[in-house]
Amino acid sequence: MDLKIKDVAELLNVSEITIRRWLLDGKIPAYKLNGQYRFSRTEIENWVISCRMEKEISSVSKNKKNDLIKLSSEKAKKIIAKKIGTQAFSLYRAVYKGGVITNIDGKTKEEVLKKSVKVIAKNLSLDADVLTDLLLDRERLMPTALNHGIAVPHTRDFLIPKSYDVVSIVYLKNPIEYGALDGKKVKTLFFLFACDDKRHLNLLAKIAHLTRNEDSLNFIHQHPSIEDLLDYIKNWESDLSNSDIEKVLH
Image (cartoon, rainbow, N blue to C red; front, top):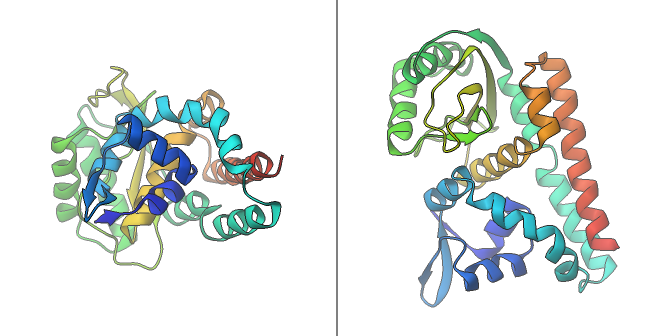
């Protein structure tokens, strides 16, 4: 799937100017098609998972305000209003659909994935064996661990045949080795199933952003109830949107 600069900016929640700066500095994977920059979903997905995004996002807080302050207040309000309407609570809605699965026990990644998928596939009316094979194929291509004890199992080509997205959160009974870059064992899995490529990348970026926050990590690793987790995510996404508004209008 080809993504444009505008698409990637929206999905990663940064300005188009920031994306162009990263392109000039060679910090984000892209290619040119008919003289215009295009992005591969798979390459951006791997870039997010490998935590290369984290280093670049840290500089956005300094530059984004200067980039966006050039916009008039009215134009900024329209941009933010559109983003809030379409993406503000996308993670909350996906977790609400997917729910929480607790006390999954297993000694290996394969064992944990198989046990989790049995529950998830039944809830989504999907074939558990096929879904497990797709997830394991993705793990062989590149581990989906985000570091800090979090992994986001998902498939490379599969899109859920629904009109909504699903994020099923699995709490492991015991941490397992997962091939994370930081070498830490994984405690919590965010199974991600989206109904289109853009929404897949948006949710992946949000999960990566959420789980790089120390307070959020501490809360998630306590394995809260679905009610408490949904309240936390809803407040986090609300604060994320409010923060964007403040950066634009101040």
